[in-house]
Length: 81
Image (tube, rainbow, N blue to C red; front, side, top):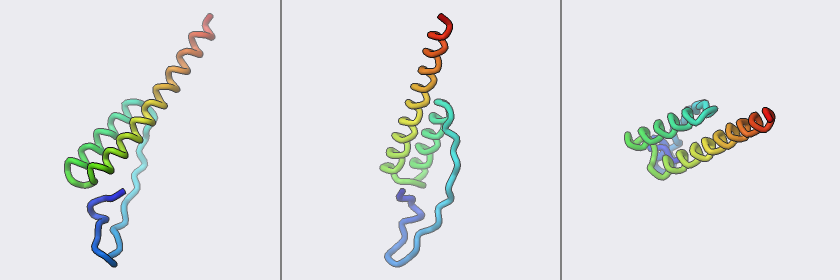
């Protein structure tokens, strides 16, 4: 990722970036993380291109969560018959 603080001049080491452990266990977690990345881009903390990539990845995870939940619901319905 190209974080604004990382973009140092030639020969200058980049600033060490802190890693965050974000829980993405539900669709609402994914929505919250996408909103957080959007705010970071608006504040100039990250580039718009990086925000787009991050939000696309979060959206993909959200779709996988929804698919897994749908699969569980279908299995429960089929098991009830």
